[in-house]
Length: 239
Picture 1 (spheres, one colour):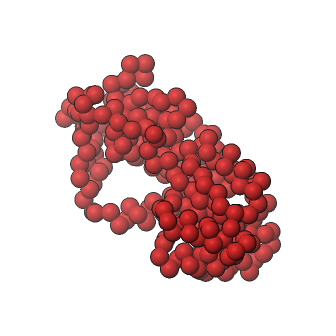
Picture 2: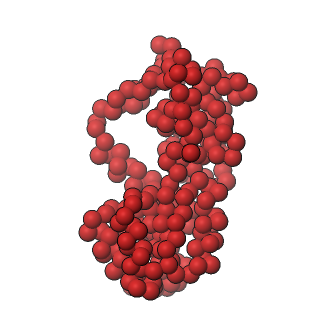
């Protein structure tokens, strides 16, 4: 099972649009649940933690603005609101009561993905600020990372890594033994300008492998999991 597959809740009564979002986002590494009623959407949003909520304004049962007001009493789940084109009042009201961003319903899937990623990055940055200032070191066999100092070493020899390479290695090390999807790694590396099917992560992983002295055909450290992403082998496998 891939780690940190972002779980999204879409509250939208247009079932065709829900299918479109599900078909577009799930191959990119998101888990998408759809609900078509406002009250049911609020109940689901409060029942389980989500990476983000995609919320329509006009809903049966309870409109999206009332849903958001109720949600914000107990939850800071990122919310991307969908509004009718030119409906400025709904957009302003949504932002004032706690929406993280909005998107007119004429959106392209690429714009939705870009805004969703931006919302998730901001949420991750806020969560990171709340983490202990001195996170514990991580060791995976001979590989050692000191997140607080942003240093890494292999068999006691310092590794010289770029910012993106370090963030990727840290994400993989935290999940050692489990698959990290490309989408998770893109977000972990805080890449700002990538396309929906960007392969920039593959380039960074290739560079990281060279610095680890790794071989993609017979990996000691980083395995490619076809169709999903990458996995850093468990400490017992690389010792």
